[in-house]
Image (cartoon, rainbow, N blue to C red; front, side):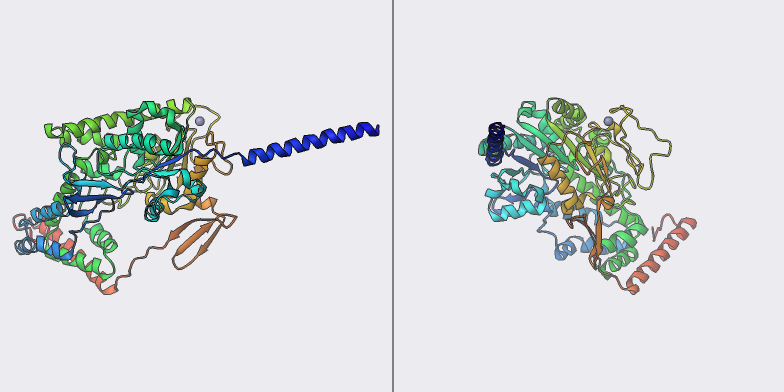
Length: 547
Ligand SMILES: [Zn+2]
């Protein structure tokens, strides 16, 4: 009996020993790290432009060396004075266009899509850990996902020209993955993380390089611009109220210029020029923006939603000189329409595909852009970043009796309706893999640790679908997720239950205007509105001194 007990004990001991050793062996085995390739958003890749030796500016940051009060005055003073005296457009709009043409010189692209000057996109041709400090800072400045810090030795940043050719940018990504990422790491697969405009790059890349599917382990798209940005659609289709006297003078100008200056400029403009002249100048300036920044660039066209592209492509891209850009844009349009099928095919072949969409903020400057109170993250609708979500506009819901459309997921046991009644995710291309966060602005995502922590989880963990990540559901409200908040002079800081920082609602840091200038600008604006009404009533059509 004793002998048997001893034998059993020694067998047990041996077993424990073996188990311990195996555990140690597992723990010490080199961790397999799949390289992560961030495809950043609009303007996040340093792009310097040169005319021979002369430096023309950094277009990604809209660094415009020609922008100075002196240059503006030089360009518009004479026609400005003439316009004020004649109460008409005495070459003022022409002067403004000429000034813009010079100011945005670095952005200039030929009608065939080739850049007029030499563009140099700063390459990040090593993993983060091996980049020089200034390049590391640049990457962190744009996309600092702290949850990936342990992966800095395999974390890559693909830089590209936001105003260039989408075909070339996609081809650049293909080369970057093969020649840099896979070559340096010896890995066979990568995790692609397209952010915002990076979503358009991914779309073209998947269409142009179907053979690269073998390189892709995961695609985690964060607020991707899969169907562009609605405000660019508004700009291109001229669905814009370029000059709303009340909104521009009482909201836009004071928001753009600090302190009293906004009201002073508003006042001066209101007295100096009739509204119709200001509107004409702004309208022509807007057309100049379209021509200089968008028309010759397939990267920019890719940010124009499909419906808006269809409406204006013939207007802007039917000439023979635009044939090359048109061909790229049409090919991109086909690629984005095929994207739901493309991603589903990848998913079915075992690639982990997830999409993170934000919503519930509304458009930037809702009065000026025709899409007004469309539901968005400031820029992208849930249909764009959520790849096909159905949504209600800001301040509305889909309705009390609304039932899910179920065009993609019709499983009766699934609930793809957001608790706030704004989103129906059953129409998303990937209804089981698309996550939503409410009340988050597009341009704030880079400062949001909660969203970036979440993205890191999707990147690093094996998350099958929206049902398999503890603590998260398809729809997430950041304010409900926050356990604690502290109010300070700067704003309200939010933390989770472990005191882990999540995000801040910063108070607007506007310089308060003095009541005098604010009041005077308001009174004069109202007076002019009255005079405009009188002018219309008295049929002073020829004279039109006020509007
Ligand atoms: Zn479902």
